[in-house]
Length: 422
Image 1 (cartoon, rainbow, N blue to C red):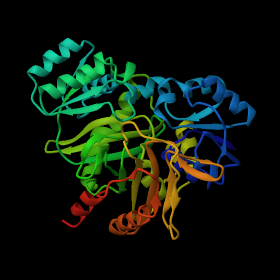
Image 2: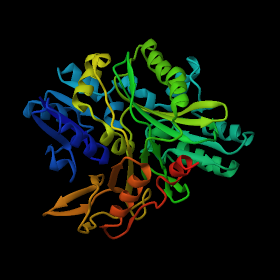
Image 3: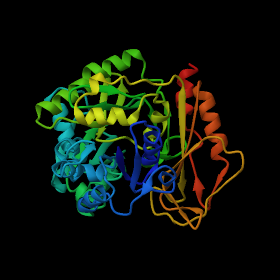
Image 4: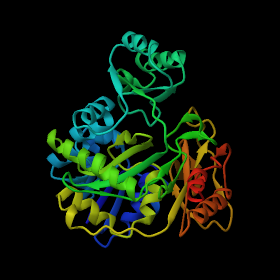
């Protein structure tokens, strides 16, 4: 069958590489793709937000199945639109994608169905929000309700910081329409765990757990980013924790969505925190995480395309999903200035002897030369039986990549190794 993947990041590169090995695949396309997906998928020009362009591409290239991975096209109903036009897709419909596109919807869902999460209040009036934080305990978490490229969250240490976050979001429109409504949450403490899961709306099959590193700089300092690196599996996600997650969070969430009349199909991301009072949900994402995908998919033994088709057709229960033993580490190499303003068009060079997997996140080829085109530029991924070896090899290879302004965190995996070493 002919498959089209929407998107242009490191996540899409990882997905395309895994799909390319499927015996079910005839031709693989990417819209718009990048310098990495171009190696395994035929690029198609266009925007992932242009429904008519995507549909036209499906007709022009005889596409049988579309993998919708970014959050924005899911939020505007790309899957619904394609379905109405006879094209099957991987991913949730617009109503189900609200679990990510509206934090207020997600929090209300959890409250209604007793899924553990942080206490919260929702505001559409800035003055009322500011009055509320005058009496709040700190730190407090201020979240833009809608999608904000992973940057719409502020952990305010005092009233002044909270007030600024509220004004930036609601009055200065820092996140556009996404920030006109906000959620203010209690601050939770504990290790974070990322769990991606395949689901067909009835059955849920979790993937290997992972640990993300959101802050820009070493020691979890600096602003939040889309993710500066990951390791898998997450050592905090032991058998007891996994059982708790399944019983109290994963299965109840799928059942809740079905009861609300918007069953979730596709990949559901659970951002969890292991607190003194048990696991709690920090956030949901309605798609594969980035860069969690880059460490999880290399550990998948089964056919990704077969699994995706089963989520769409409602037959996930009959699919055998197998995972490799071992660990993976991903180092994100970013442009200077990220997650703020950054320059593009920097030439990338790679030393001889590079022996890790390189996923392209924000780079493209121009006249045979790879150049930067995004904030997060490259993902260096290594797998090994032991996490220590995966981390060491990933860093050894990250040092072989050069471009003007390149930077990456030097402590990805350190916390996980400390846990494993006791």
